[in-house]
Length: 234
Image 1: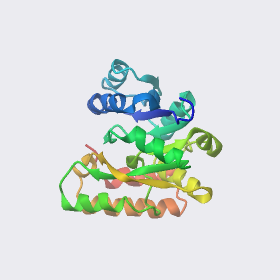
Image 2: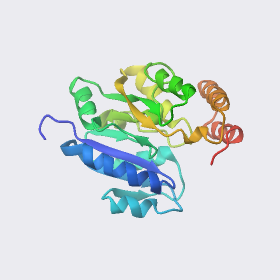
Image 3: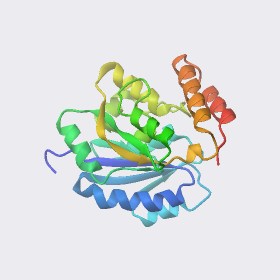
């Protein structure tokens, strides 16, 4: 493994049994020699997420309360790789993910993500996916799956644990202040489940409102309350 970048794949979950049954085999099948550990951090699931993760050979850690920032920090603390790859359970990385990240790291990239497309043919969601190619203020969300050098993650202090929402954008904002951030020009697949119980327009407006509040410095807890107030969750 000399000269290669070793990946630690970290997946924060809460009641994601079904998604883990699809995601974990994909990671294992395509990670190859580059993935040195597969870590699932549970946030108090009521389903069989923990058992499924163990069944597929993941290292499992548990927190009593769901907090994606705290879950991912715990996973990173246990990681052995020199590159961390944070993946949401309802995303589907490409079979080439390990090689893509390896290539980016060998080219000097310390942090980055993918574009994405939804698992839906709805034309409005296609517009959303198309927009993820741009490396602007809206880039770097958790659905785009974040990879980052372990040393840089540690230098930054990881995710801020008090961020119960927007923790990914907050970290990427700190990265961009001092380092470059790269978007791999390939699209992973993301679940459109957020849109099942909400209209496209409602989701877009709420997301924009949350972004504005975030950049105004509104507290993470207030952001979360606002988000839950305006969107239905199934």
